[in-house]
Image (cartoon, rainbow, N blue to C red; front, top):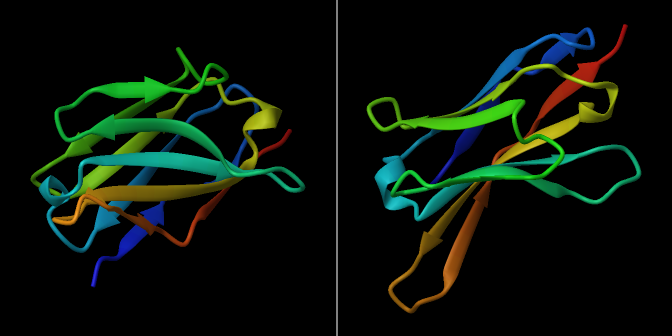
Length: 120
């Protein structure tokens, strides 16, 4: 049973920083990619950033230069360092892991989400 547990969310002022963590119950080597998504009230869930098993990263345009995704294989954890936070970054942030199965289908796993609120 794969579990992803996010932590690190909270209330922060504009311009502040937060670091989100996503701890997996299995080795993250088993995933082809892991990423962070977010969903603001009344909006669709959107990709924020992802990192592949090879270490390649990709970011949404809205967070480039402000957010950094990284991984610790030793801790089976993926991080999202968020700097220069803006009001529009307020959302529930979800961790996602993708695993390519032997039948070539992709299995997706989601965490329960962590709230990030940017407010003065």
